[in-house]
Picture 1 (cartoon, helix red, strand yellow):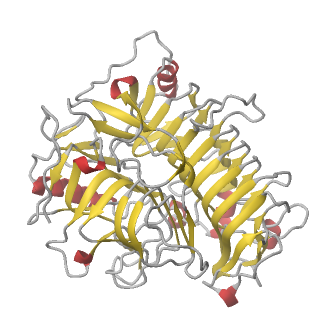
Picture 2 (tube, rainbow, N blue to C red):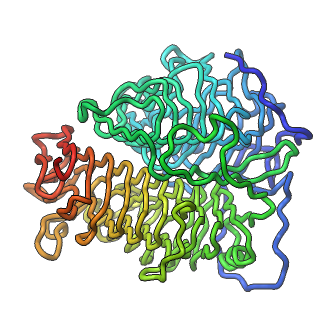
Length: 636
C-alpha cells in the first residue's frame, strides 16, 4: 500500500545520530549521578535545530534508504528482544515524511526499552509503510515450546501513522499489525490503516497469553483482542473490536462495543473520560526547530485530540529544557529546574542519591527511551511539590538495594493543600515503578499522591515476581524474594479528586493500593496479589484478617468510583492454601461505587474468598481461569 508523502519541513538536515556517529546503537555506559557543587555558570544551551540527545537517540530522515534504516532497527531489536533486565535504552525518532514503499516496506520489531516515535506535529506527518510490531517471546529453549507475551514490557510507539504492509512476510504475519504486549507498554497518537491490529500474536506456535496494555488518542482499524486478559483503550476511535478475556475497558472511545450484557462479553464502556490529558510529545516544526507539545487537560471527552487539527495545548521550545544524561548530577538537574528549565531525560539509567525536585507549577519532565531513575542509598528519586500543572511522562522509577520511604511523591504528607487546579491537574503519564527485577529492590511505598487534582494516566507499579536473582547461586526462590525484594504498598492516594486511567499495581506485601482521598475515580484497575508469601502468617493483617485486599478504599471515604477492576490470585506456597478474604475492600456507603469488578484464580494454591467485602464468589483451584464477577457494588 502506498501513501502520498506527508508535508515535509524546510531545510531538513540528513539522517543523523544525535550526539554520536552514524552507526548502530551500542549499549549506553551508565555513570552514576553524583551530587555536584552548585555554580554560577549559566544554563547550558540546547540547540533548537540540532540538539544533542545522546548516543542512544537516533533521528531518521525519509531521504535515507529503507535498507539502512531497517538494518539499524533490526540490530537493536536483536539486542533487545530478550534483554528484559538490561540497562540499555533506545529512542528512534522519525522526521516528518514517508518511510518504506509498497515493494520495500519498513518492518519494525520493537524490543525491550525501545521507543518508536514520529516527530511530526500530527500523527499523519510521519507515515510508516510497513509494520511496527511486537511478537510473542519464546522462553526457555528459545524455540516455540513456550511462546507468550506475558513478559513483553517497557516499550512504546507514538505519534505516527502505520500503513500496514506485510510484503515479504509469511501468510500469517501479513494478516495484521501485531502488538502482543503486556504491562508498561503504551500506544499513543497512532493511526493504523490497511489491515487489522492484533493485540495477541496468533502466528507463533504454542500458547499466546498476553496480559494488558494501553492505547490512547489513536485512530484504529478493527482490533483483534484475542488472549488479552485486561486492556484499556482511552479517547480513541475503533472500527470494531473482536472479543475480551476478563476485563476490557473503553473510555471515551468512538466505536467502542456496548457493555449492556456484561460480563458476557466482559466489556466496560464509558461514553466519555472524566478527566484526561494526553502525554507530551517531542516534535519538529516547519522550520526544523524542536519543541515539546503539552496537551491541555480535558473533561468529559471522547475521541482523539487531533481529529480536527492540532492538539490543543501549549508548545515549549526545546531550548527551554535542560537535556540531561545519566552523567548529569542531581544537583545540576535541580539547579536547572530552579532556574526555570523543564527537564528532558535522554535514554539511560540514572543513579539518584537525592530527590529530583519539581517545585514549579507547569514544569514538564519528559523521558525518552524508557529513561530510568534508580534510587541509591534509600533516596526518593522524584518529588513533585503541591503545585498545579506539573507533568511527568515516560519515566521508570526503580527501587534500590536500601529501602526508600517512597519512590515518587506528589505533594507532601499533610501539606497545606489549596494549590491544585482541577482544570490543570498535575499529571503522570506512562510512569512506571519497579521493586526488584533488574536488581534487588526495597521500598516502603512506590507511588504516593498527597496533592489534590492529580491525574495518573497509565502506570504499572510492580514489585517483581521474577528477576535476575532467580539465576543467582544459592537463591531459594519465593522464600528469599519475600525477604529481599520488599515493598509494602504500591500506590497510596491521599489527595482529593485524583483520577487514574489505567492503574496497574502488582505483588506488594500488604494492600497493593490504598485510596484515602475523596472523589477519586479509577478507570481500569488491574492487580495480581503477591506470588510469594511463605505462609498464611506472612499474609494477614494485624487484626487477624486473612490476606490484604488488592484494592482498599479508606474506611472514612464517602465518594469514590471504580470502573472495571480485577484482582488475580496466583500464590505458590503453603498448604492447603493461602487465603485472601476479599479482592476489594471498601466502606459501606452509597457514595462509594464499584462497577464491573472481578477476582480470578490463575494457578497455585491461593484462595480469594470474595470479590468485594463479603460479596461475590470464591476464586480457587476449582474455578481456575473463571472470573467471579460483581456487576455493581453496592447492588442497585
